[in-house]
Image (cartoon, rainbow, N blue to C red; front, top):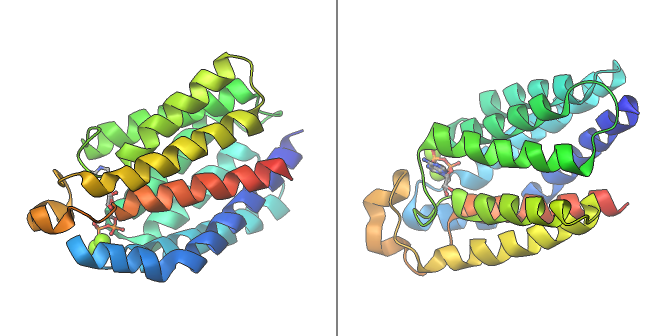
Length: 213
Ligand code: ADP
Ligand code: MG
Ligand code: MG
């Protein structure tokens, strides 16, 4: 039912906060090589605020869409930076697809992720190969949709998509940055993974564990 969905989302946001905490230093370090070094702290601020907001609205019986809209605002307000705005877009877009009532199907979750990918690309104007989170998000969304269409369960489809996202995030190391702050650093970024792609893969992997519980 809708209460159970909201509480799973609140658990997922807590797990996201924890995995970001564990990796904040590493994310900041990657961002310091070809960026301004704030990706770890920004993601930490955003995910902490989103998890706290979700926990508070779940107590009040909010549905998935309301919960994700409030978490999205908390994340983008507190994180600052490009990735904070984009994570706000991601959460709000997924929520709009899920709605406030009932239990979302694998197909509606997959449609939410595909819509989030489209929204990020339309908001940020980055394409695949520009060395951003889009490089992990596109294969993640494509793989999830493909597995769900072929009849896989949400958890199996999500697990497969997370593995693909992790691989794609690692491969951003070969790319030359085309947008964002890293663009100015050009060659310095080659040999280093994109921080936003790495954090997206970490988040996807963590949610696999939440869905398996
Ligand atoms: P800022 O660059 O404002 O300091 P962060 O360090 O938190 O923000 O996030 C940087 C990450 O944001 C990059 O590693 C990249 O993945 C992502 N990013 C930057 N610009 C864009 C964009 N136009 N579209 C998609 N993702 C982007
Ligand atoms: Mg930064
Ligand atoms: Mg910054």
